[in-house]
Length: 194
Length: 194
DNA sequence: ACCGTTACCAAACAGTCGTTTGTTCGGCAA
DNA sequence: TTGCCGAACAAACGACTGTTTGGTAACGGT
Image 1 (cartoon, rainbow over the protein chains, first blue to last red):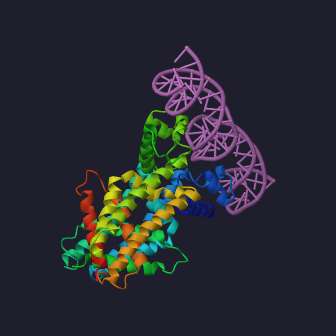
Image 2 (tube, chains in turn red, green, yellow, brown):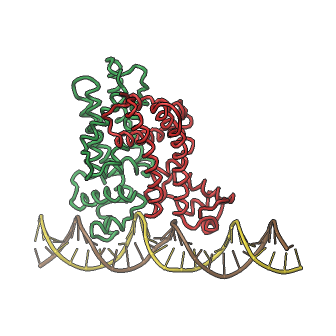
Image 3 (cartoon, rainbow over the protein chains, first blue to last red):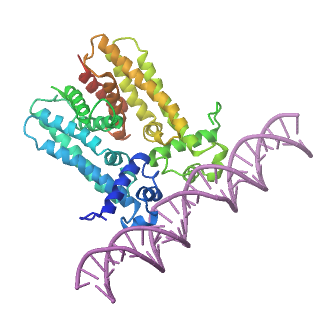
């Protein structure tokens, strides 16, 4: 049910799905929980979705699109590779915090998708990794980054670190999203420096 | 049911729980699945555990103990902080790969524990973080690491990175556990260097 | 005033969930 | 041989699962 014009109710439902799947996990959330969140019977939800798994896909896909949009913007940036990589890292963590629920579901619950839907997400994940690798390769070619850096390894490490850092983020904590992103970027860039 | 002398069946059951909880998630695994894995009726499993959640706790706790044992060994090592931190990082990743299932469950499924059981695990997590912070602080005091390093932040980042790196590990991949650990340690240490 | 549509409820569907029960069977100790 | 104990099964427990159905109000367009 990937509709162009989303009804109000459907938007509410997707928001509730993001919140609950993030907090309780996909299998830990029932249609009853979702119905309660909207003040509806669980059966009534099927006027706005074809299945529970379709909701999961929609939330996961929204998370993926948020991340990809920021990454592509960073990739298209002018200037040296370290500047672009820094922008990507900060954007990654800002996205993760701004869209906390969708990001959490994207990272932790996507494996419960059916084979074909999971494959669709895998494509987006590959595209993201590709972007990070391209920037790092640019940096190596330009002599900014260490030549001996294993590109695939570095790219994964970068994403890995970012994904767990935001798991510690607390809205009432001392550090804001951008600050966390900057510290994170600084540490990673030092590790990659030529 | 934290028994001193584990019966054979109970050991089998815990092993199956680690495998299945890791692969399908806690809520995605039923007692039926566990029974099938042992060739028993699901009701028969209650001769070896008091509840499904008790199994989860036992698996999570085993994971925590594996990590802590290696971390404490690294902490007690003689020599400069960077050597001890490197040992801890490599040990972390080696543990994660050696005890893949228990580690995965420890990291991803512990949040489904009941309040009191989760609190018990939280204590072990705090102890682990404490160890990492202590080593980094030693390094700062000795002038090995940058003075302006945010210790709490660095400690979390270190663990974060390690936890996702092993999510990419494939037994048939080109890189072994120790190799991954070494590359990871190298990158982090460069980032912390004075 | 009538139509078709949408959104919802109440109820039922056929399973599955985690857990408990009553019972049986094999082996071991006395 | 007897008594006991652990391990297992078959069956049932009540609750809950995701999903479908039939019916019914309220709606905007004609």
